[in-house]
Length: 432
Image (cartoon, rainbow, N blue to C red; front, side, top):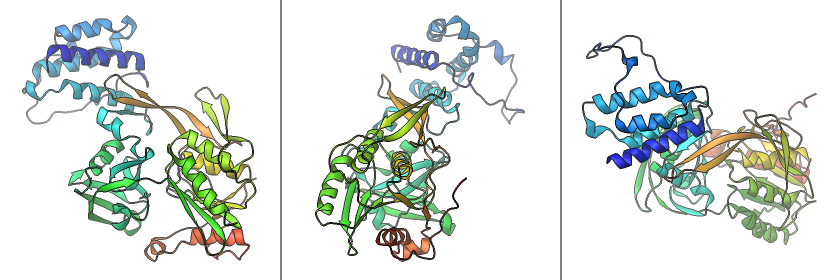
């Protein structure tokens, strides 16, 4: 890379490090006790090399009160530049990105992330209508990329038997454990008609297996439904995206014309999406009220209202299906409907993702996503790391999936029809 390019990168790094201001108190690093074969002792490393012309200029741009804290960073940068045995192996852009990633990761928040330009490009693909890939929703959990479920039953992911909870271990033979989620997704996506080998671990069966899936163009229909034979309307919302409210309106219009006796809103495996979409969807089912409360870093709370419009369904008896894959905007929607007693929740404890991220674009098409607040339900219940407890707890076992049995859906329909609930249903003990 030419010196001018390196200078631009250094300038960007200085800007980000200074304006981003040392979250967590400083630059974190490893102090390794002992040596490995080939190490050699040579002087005091903390005296540092002579700064190069480029880094000297960059160091001069750091505010004087922060220069001492940044000294170690620039020493290591110069040591690499002046001593690494293969200068052609030094990629200054990757050094810059790596430094920024380390700074962002130091806050210890799974949802505060730095995205390279490539990662930024895939961050919201599933919210925008269509793409080429395998057709599965994937989220990050404890450093793993975890399948939340297929987009629909016709996707390659569904036909390959991928199910909620499967952990992605390798993609085309590359270990992706601990890899940034967007990079994992970028590896899985690809041109329609090409194959991808995905190695998965299924926790409930304690086995690892590999499937070969042929990618295709995925058309994302985020809201769809059908009228059941028992007269209950069933609506599935798979993501809260750009077109979800309009698609929900079209689905509701078709179902309401058939005079259903009740409505089941299925949010299982829905990892969330846009807050605005959740506000719009709640406006279809609530006459008034708040969608959620926003609590900032100082404990201040502000209410965000439901947004009215479209098809309004205020009186039809309603049940919401949730599970461990229901997160973020799904939990906002389900929590508000539960708080206002507009619907009961049936299924399993939700994921517990109640933090708010702002995505800030950077000048080279990279971006940084920063947690800035938490969502609470309208009654002030915490979502983050807690989730929502259903009014009727119903498990769905691996055997149920294999047999294509859905006891959660059956329990929801039985509740709406006034029929006896299955014996597998558990009613939580009310909290005092």
